Amino acid sequence: MGHYSLTVGLSNADQDVLQADVLASFGWAALAALLAALAVGTDLAVRVQARMTVTEATAARIAQGDLSARLPITGKGDDLDRVSQAVNAALERLASVVEASQQVSSDIAHDLRTPLNRLRINLLEAAQKLASGENPEDDLTAALAQGETIDQTFTALLRIAQIEAGARREKFAPVDLAALVADVADVYANVAEDAGSSLAWETHGPMWVMGDRELLTQTFANLIENAIRHCPPGTAIALAVQAEGEHVTASISDTGPGIPVAERDKVLRRLYRLEKSRTTEGTGLGLALVKAVTDLHGAKLILTDAAPGLRVIMQFVRIHGVA
Image 1 (cartoon, rainbow, N blue to C red):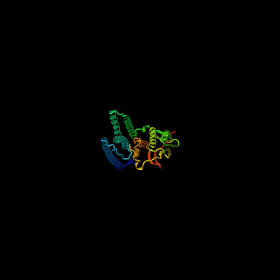
Image 2 (cartoon, rainbow, N blue to C red; image 1 turned 135 degrees about the vertical axis):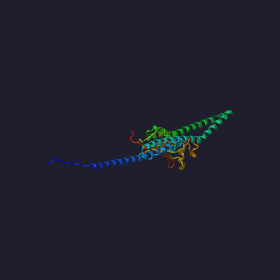
Image 3 (cartoon, rainbow, N blue to C red; image 1 turned 180 degrees about the vertical axis):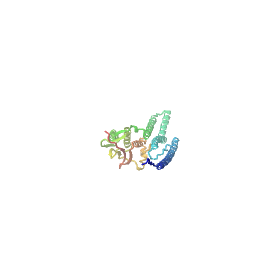
Image 4 (cartoon, rainbow, N blue to C red; image 1 turned 90 degrees about the vertical axis):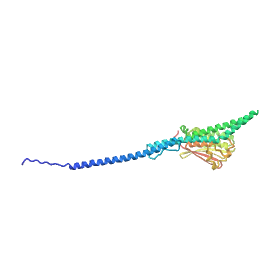
């Protein structure tokens, strides 16, 4: 045999074609990804810029004193939504404080004019009697009484404004409402008896709510005092505290003249007094304070018939696991 050699070769053409196809695919994919990223980025930037523009406009309205303005919330739960919710909550609190302050100023301007005029008249008559050599003691006594009434009214108005602004929530702690009502009723039992009325109460075991003990005590004291003051002798006053599912319901009822249905919303306003109550002592702030305290505690306040008389119902959220 001769000296021969066999050489076998394979062409790289197919690999070159495949490589070119792969590179082209990667190139087109990269271009598509780049275009998609640009589109998404542009859309996101436009959306964010739109929200920032609205936020800037809202901030300008707030700076000009429009406390009703609120930052937009999309509902997506993103960071901007969370920031907007926090800012809106702060604006709600600020608006309530400003509104309460304005309402106090309005109440003082409109409803304290009469007692201030009476005080002025008492002092003028006292001065005239003193100048003519007469005894001004009666007029000075009346002036002192008017001054005391005005002071009590100012104090009550400011206290209501403070409560409505939510300034007392930091003092919230578990309170046994059943024990609190029993203690208040026990204190006022003799007062009611001296006024010719009767006071009874019924509670069953601990019933815990979150609240401010001092404000709740004053609330029930105001309700009992109102019933004693505005009801005739012989009126029966009854307090009760009971659990109803996840709520604690406290009520005070009397067998007095009651409050007409058309007047029940009005008596919760500051300084509002029924015509038949204008001859009795009081500032017209008792039920307004009760409403402010129940609102602060997230409770529900209901005025209804006791058949006969009035029943005031307060429904609180019950808490469990308190020793």
